[in-house]
Length: 231
Image (cartoon, rainbow, N blue to C red; front, side, top):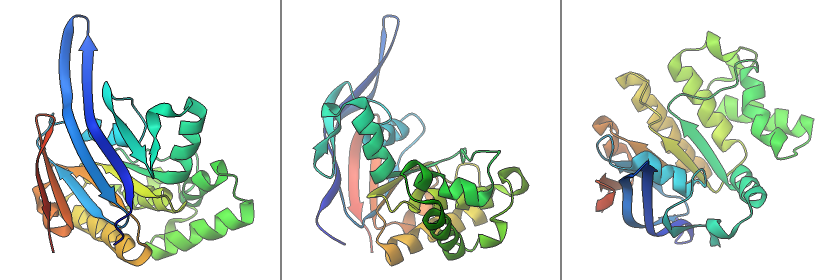
């Protein structure tokens, strides 16, 4: 693992406002994610985990504070530049899979490469290679609705890593999976971390998975209360 920061948050605050009511979701979070880390953010529902990942991924803006992606402050970027940076540098895995139903598994996996402007033959080659690496190449011509939840989430992971992003952010990726599929998915991401050096940061409240990470952050009431490295 390198000591080169991929993501950095400085004094991150997020307050949601509805009418005259203010609800603080993050209360001054400082965080550095190094290249090659395999990190989980744990905490109860409502602790701010999803908010933190959305801010780190540039999907939402903080009320105050700053997020840096490979040293670039996200708040200083024009929306189009931010979208390009996200596309190239960040892979996302969501609990709802978010696969495109009218595209096959292969097409879903290659879609990010298409958006990046990778030529057709190259993106199909790379998509097939990652599907084979994840053991789901046999589903290449299937549509998402024909797959189980665990299989769909593997496709979502394939799509997230095929573009070789700087970091993959996974928001409750096992929330819709049973225990066996949850462990298999985390082990899959761990293998990609070890073989490809892919940096992972995922949010979870699934306590069964936390012994599989190298670093465990605990978020409570919008604050990081614990930062523990594990063997």
